[in-house]
Image (cartoon, rainbow, N blue to C red; front, side):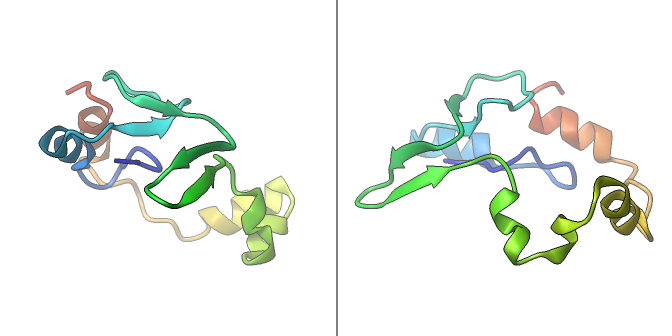
Length: 102
């Protein structure tokens, strides 16, 4: 089971799915969690049953599809922050649960 990131807006079922199926719980090696997992590193290749995928933990390759990623840092932050609602009240407790720190 490969989780691309730690959820902040809902409880993840990743660890439960791994436990129920016997699958490895895989996260990027930089994941800030308090439970054991199989670390995936940048550009690591995994054999996914007749398919090979290369994992890379950055968004550099998305620049050609999303022009906002070509903005300088200041303009990027301003564009993203414009109109963002406040964090949901339960966000911190959801993050604690998903990081195994409940």
